[in-house]
Image (cartoon, rainbow, N blue to C red):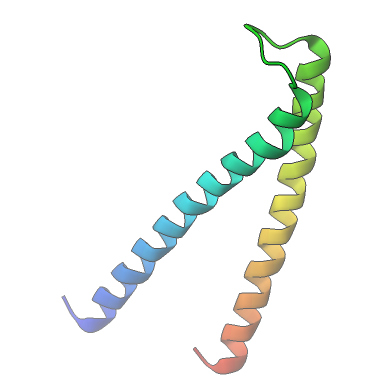
Length: 85
């Protein structure tokens, strides 16, 4: 395996690990920002009000998360292109 192939394999591994870490962070944030807000006293099932609240909160949070991530990625790409990497 040549150095370019090794470099590409390492980059891909880092991207994969970053994606997993990103997904874990998203799930933890959803739990703390939505579930705990919408379900103050967990029971054996969600009421319709709790379910509606969790769904709406998750949709808003995911939209904001995606916007922040896409903006961040665009910024990184711009910086990468400007530095010649």
